[in-house]
Image 1 (cartoon, rainbow, N blue to C red):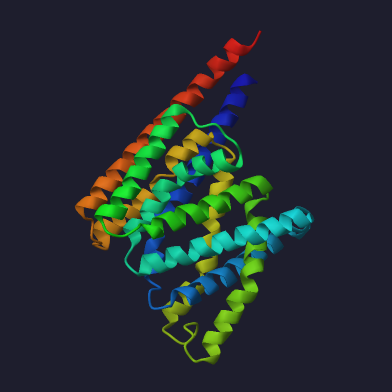
Image 2 (cartoon, helix red, strand yellow):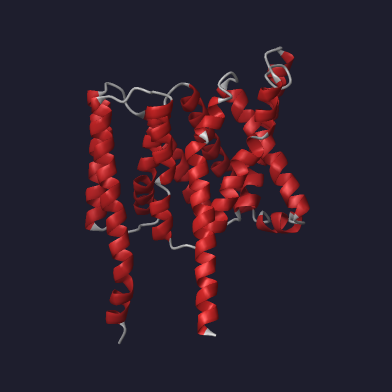
Length: 310
């Protein structure tokens, strides 16, 4: 009986690891997809991402008979109001990302997602009164030194990376408080953004500048698959994260910014100067300390609990 239980746990862990790793790998190389749409203005690209994501969610909910669950999860007015705010932060994150990728700032996008775990710790401290452990303070100071070095030696505040970390961190914080399933949440958020997205697409069409069905057929197809490109890795992530320890998820998530960074430097040949190298090195050091501290803290938890038990 115990052997069967262990096998079941191992199987769930393996499935969780594969789906979570797949999601982060996909997000890491997804810049290549958005680069193929550089001929589409960022605001129009964002609008199509919203519309086609909602279409995809509607199809999946219909196939899985999930409308009752969707309505039940959004029955609370508090949840509906909170989802409006999460939709706004998601919109800022998507818009910043697609603009930065096609403007040649993939490396700075990776900076944002390297910083994000440390930014989440700060949000936890501010909004959830979570206590910071000594080495977490040290990690944040190293990351802050990296950002300040970029600001003063690179003569430009890294607003793209900070904006991505801030918007995604705030989005994640709201969604954590709500505890709504990813598909229902994404459906609600895209529904909030739908009037603005459709309005902008219609404006572009009326003015004769719209991309959909007016450029080559490849662009039209790429715009239509923005829905699954957005939703599938998100669903895979949420499926996997339920089967893994958060420490494991925290370590795997660095696959995404690493992929972005490597593509930006070696595939798209973005400039990577000495000030950037120094700053990234400080941030990477911060992440190593942060991850190692989290791993050792989690390993020590059972021991601490055992000692505290009378």
